Image (cartoon, rainbow, N blue to C red; front, side, top):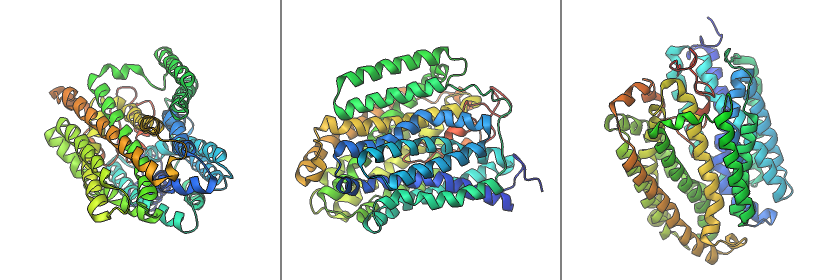
Length: 505
């Protein structure tokens, strides 16, 4: 039996090893992203850190990941997807080790930024390895298996994080990645075939990636530190980035893709939705622990309903979106999420889980189920099939950047002081001011979707038939349904037949 790239069958031993490898690698990033928020109050207490350090603990990772994820996919195409994937796993594990032994907040934030670089290398590589390794007849099933197992990891993440924080300590939230990497790397080197894109030129938009990272970093710093000069410099850097991308021969962000009004509109909706999600999940774990007195484990368990609903119902939601079109799901979903978020205003001191917490998270979860899969499907249907990979990668990066900026901006807009998370009374008051802002952004996203998202007949030609299988499980992060999308079919959106050819999914 041929075990080379593009010929592996899912039923073979090699096929199972490939799935295991990609699940282990992407699972590290997925598990890390779902457990860190739960650990934030304990991190602040142990390191004597103020709110800004907690914000940077979340944002440093998202900053480098969002800025470099498209570049990571391109590196895999040029130098070998397995090689870059393994490099990403090792890099991520070393960053995790530094996080776990960090003596202070500054070292922790720097280590989180290093983690994000590793995530930008391994995240697109995980799905790209499946796309490149499996026989065309088995790719959809392999992606479904990868997504399902990854979803289980996302579901247990908050529980595992809470158990670790209350048990061995918050440092093990990061140190757990080291043994996972030690298991993943030898399996990848032994059982996963190497693959690369023979048309990749080796020209990389490194300057574009750096400008993107600097712009996001300066704007984030300006929002956290309430500094005007950094904000102005960040905006200027962002303008320089756009000008560079217009002239670059092989830009990281090809601006021509935004000629599709529908693609532009759905990315604006993505920015609204994931800004609200990022801000909400940052705040809710603090509210439950600081104000309601929940333990880290109880907080992790409390958040499970949203992930479980996503795991169980996303595929059905994607099928519903196929039947009725994206306009209604992308309007109703954000409104349901806004309602769920507003219901969390009932969560206060001595909050009852059944009466106060669970109803809000169930409504929130139903809203997420309604919108996430159709959102991804609409992104892919908005451009020609040859650009599906780059379209998905841009949408993924937009979602992460939105969460990054929301975590930076919300405490400033709500008037949270540096030590507010240490006081139940003070944090509870600012939480009540911040939550309507999250809900308002979701309502804005719903209105934009209603006004701009249409279902023209000609869009049908842009949607690859297998989108109906894959889109419901390969969505933008929360994290990270679909964090590997940037690698499909390659980092520049080209299918195996060259520019404009349909991708092999």
